[in-house]
Image (cartoon, rainbow over all chains, first blue to last red; front, top):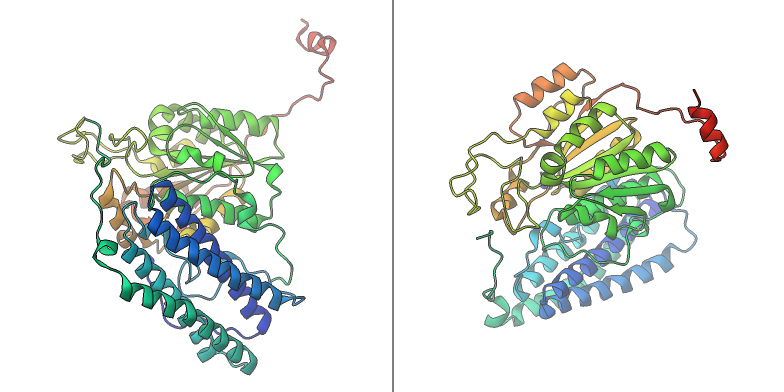
Length: 177
Length: 278
């Protein structure tokens, strides 16, 4: 059900590409924010800090992108008509893949996976479009995603044993006695 | 694609209150699907109401910016029915879980389907009472041994909400998975647009008390057959279904919604007396 297919349908115009980018950055920022709140609620401050930092980075991207869109008239695209091959936008972490004992390493790995998907989406747009300007801009967006990827790869390499360990819950949820 | 700015964004339908569901819970994606659907329909928040009963999933009204009513256990449907009849211009959604809807509220469920008032009932089915720490619910399989209250399983047949809803007269029936929130949003849009009582069953895992349900995302499959308007055909499909065909509308009926005519009055005692005079 959550399986991904190959290259997306071609994107043929700058407004269409910008509409996709805007939706993707918006969803990524919101999702990282949602996950940060979830982790804060469950007293996972270290994991929450990762998602909060990524939320802020995505908000920065979003701000730049919104400025770039300027007065471009963007098409309205229904959530199910976007041309990515995933259900939600590729940069948004699947909520079903987190849990309350998420380790720092798992959080970084999940984030890295989705940042890579975002970059790959833009790369595939560049590969499949027949519009040179769309291709150029898509490659630029893919490169921008590489910044987050590099940062997360470094973070992953620096994860220590304590970042990979799931701390045992002293009061686990149990079915009623 | 229309070249028009979107009037509302999904975020516009969320409140400042942050959900406290367990991380990984399917209900997060249901909330996201509802807000996406409302944005796509461009419904002004003040023209929408979400009504719920009690349970984890019944917390949804608090997390939205539309009108909300977090009511009594199992009684969401009668409250929503009254609201829709009194304020027919509102778009009314009802949210809740399988215990709230099919056990405590089971009788109301039957009669809401029969009555066919124009509203959309979104049931987050996780086959367990999560808020009270994991007891068997009406939709739990008979051999589930996860609760110490039923250590050898309940031994009784699970409730079949879609079959019962269909037999009772629901005008729109669909099953979706919380692992595909975008498809869910699309189905919710269709459910809201379809006149009459729409029933949407969401397979929404309880990651805490039914952790094995995490596998649902790999088990569910997109239904291959499109919807029918023939209730008998829909029933046959449901009776041979394993419960994991999702992502499409199963049934769209053509029964007109229940819309009683109300007299317009000035609310005066004299008018009431005149109405009831023998």
